[in-house]
Amino acid sequence: MRRTMNPYMIIGGLGVAFLICMVPAYATFSPKTITPESAECIACHKIETPAIYEQWGSSKHFRANIGCYECHMAEEGDPDAYQHDVVLKDGTTRPGKLISVIVSPRDCARCHEHEVEEFMQSHHSKAARILGSLDNTLAEVVEGNRGFVTTAFPHGVSAAAVNGCWQCHGTEVKVIGNGRLDPATWPNTGIGRINPDGSEGSCSACHSRHEFSAEQARNPENCGKCHMGPDHPQIEIYNESKHGVAFRANIARMNLDNEKWILGEDYSAAPTCSTCHMSATPKQPVTHDVGMRISWNNRPVFSIRPEISDEKMGLPGAKVNWQTRRQNMYDVCLNCHNQNFVDAFYMQYDGLIDLYHEKFASPGQELMNLAQPLLRQPQFSNKIDFVWYELWHHEGRRARHGASMMGPDITHWHGTYEVARNFYSELIPELEELAEKHLHSDDVTKAEAAKALRKRMEEILSSKNHSWFINKMDPEEQAERLRRQQEFQSRYAK
Image 1: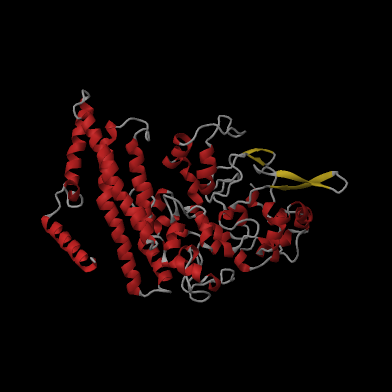
Image 2: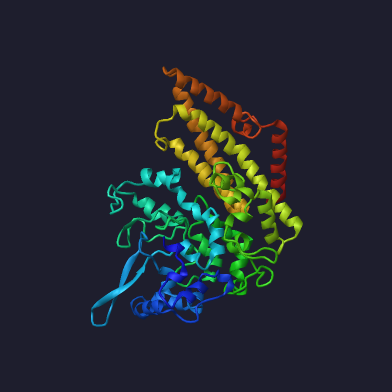
């Protein structure tokens, strides 16, 4: 395979240069000059693709004499290798070098070994595993069809999945001969892309070709390509938070292009996504595993601790408990806030998680499980399937993510308010109708299921969390709420 080649086996005379290139980037070694192979690429591409040439010329790679060939070189037998012949001025061609279009994390690891190792241990690199999930079923079946036919997909594939899910999560890139990549799978910079060499991930998802700018990767909008929208609106949450407001007001003081970018030493005006989840503090180095400072995974119906999700994915993070990760984030926070502030923030965040779990996720999941024998198959052929899915996958996630990043409007109006509205005005009425429909069914199994569903629903709605809905609120609480309303009206009435 391409990425395990011995540098001494490369073209004669360049062995020493490439041996130097194999040293991790933090050692700051590089070839003394641009190699002949890269010089040949540059001579053509500065004319044929001047924007790419300009971007590379602005990069640290250029300053380190790392050129086209050092990244794109391939070996005989690589799945995506092809011979890139050179067209001479007289119109004739001569054989060129074996290269590949895709530069995979395994390629980057020739110089950036430590960074790639951390990235490969993260959820980011595994993002393409969504391809068999419920989300992707929506894009392929419910939203899509098999109308997009390519060489690798002769029976067709959903254009909704290709242009949506796969562009953030990544897809398995298919090679269709002579280094050509199937158009359903390329171009693709999904962060969990499965590359022809078998590696997972895409460094260019964050470090865009061909400048690979650290400044861009540190900018919140870089993360906002994927972390946005109805189910995970992190960029919207950040923008409304005090952190985002401070960033926009003080962007000129952020030193985003600084070589050393340590919180409290090189900047202090505001944090970015990178500050909190990846970048260095006086006590912590940079990390490319974005899960090492997260103490809740808010993706599922029920928030779970990150070590649990790491264990499910077979990641080494399974050995790093949430308390350690929270302390890692504490270290970031304490550069700008005091201990009491950070303690109280986490109490608020955990309280919101508890509220969501206890009042909505737990009873909602229980009732949906009881309703399964009464629902038409397949999934999403019933209105209630969409109601429940959006309740936890969209609104429930928004509430939890909003609280995690101090975004009050998204936590409330786009989060808990919509969770509650859809729980009481959509989910419960649909369940009541479903139970009533089958309560006297000739099918004994369905009748029993309907009876069990109705009984449990009545119990849940009679509980302290939900009794208001059936007008059975505790009298003392009802009186207290009336008193507060009257006080408010007397204070502000004109």
